[in-house]
Image (cartoon, helix red, strand yellow):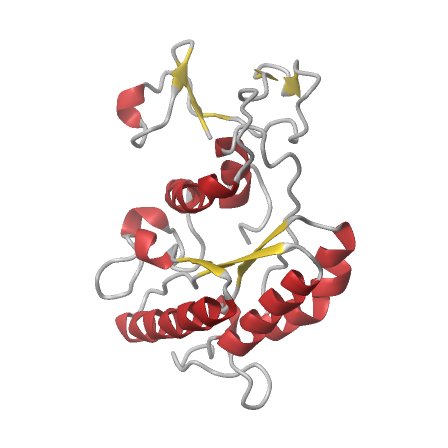
Length: 231
């Protein structure tokens, strides 16, 4: 499902922020449509009194097998559900950040998703809501996935999540607190933090295959002690 785990874009964004996003909860459920996300937003998201809410939706609103973009309830489209979720989040005092829908394997569907994302971006602009186009960072010109960034044409790989995380971090870094107390220290051997200020979950920092060097990692990723530590 790629919703939970240490290699997700959410965990990577949290790490890139250097401890400024102290805690993060992924409320995603595999297979959920935009309508189902809308129905769960109070109990599964706003009940935790968040400061920031990332909204990524739309993949499961696609008509299976036909490639047609379908509404999830009558004439209500993905864009409407997402826009209303952003409105609800803002009304509760949290900052909504809407992410574009990710690509698909078919160019026809991919083009339709690009058009849908443009509509969603316009809706967000009209509402004054931040919109981040992660789709553009992981797709080819025809709207399909960059092959290295997905293994099933639905979910991003670890490499894809790195690109998505960097895209999001670049967009939001101006919103983060100005203080910088450094990245929380981690015990990579035991998977526990040695830093009493560390509020992020143990294991946030991911060791790559022993023996990896900077040359085997994407741009901007660091190597410590001769072993790659990616985040």
